[in-house]
Image (cartoon, rainbow, N blue to C red; front, side):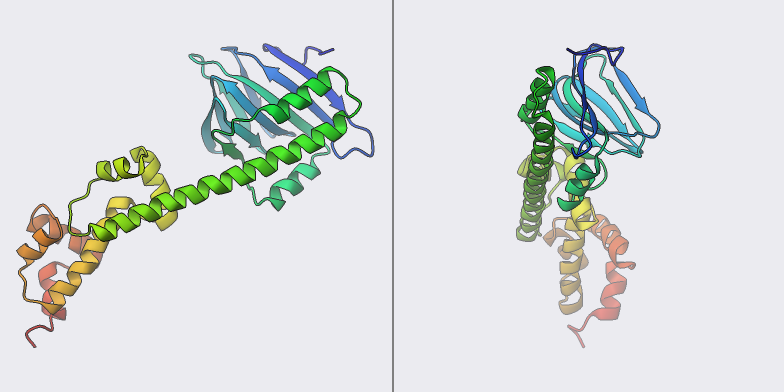
Length: 279
């Protein structure tokens, strides 16, 4: 039977492994919606492996913050600061494995799957591994050690696989946007246009693109325009006003400002130094 290991609305079972078991001790439980739910670990001694059934849990892991929602999975590392609590307007229901002794196997798995720091995977959408452990702990299954080890291995491997797929999808998204820029270099494209194309919020797209190319989407697009315009400035006698119009800038002032930002001089100065058309 479960014991009261928490002052919150939780159903928790304590697992003790034997000397030869890889995991020596764990708490396996379910947290039910509770507006007062809050956990603070100044220097955590546990791996906290959790799945969110419903509601929202606001989480701080060292200096990083995120919100875990329905269907999300997350892993908080030991030797770190943990602070997490229910959104009082939408209190969380979650199932968890807290391993505080014999967790070297988890560290090895995380390293083997190239998962570093804390792990938050939105839309994991599979609580079955946690539930199997919970039911085994509740029924005092003699195979709990094997079930716990097997389940944790599956959780980590599934997170790694889904994380890789998500990252590949994100890379595909920003690569598609880059191709779109190349094909529409003479058009005026706004951030709203980009968001509509890739179906992402502005903050998401901004973060994703900058993480991939170390520059924001519109700054990247303008740089492409400027690099292309340099060819016209140095190789033709097309007026600067016309070049500005060709590349979709609002006016020559907007073009000159963007050009100077990227090149360090005005279009007129650049043409004087580099124009070979009339030489």
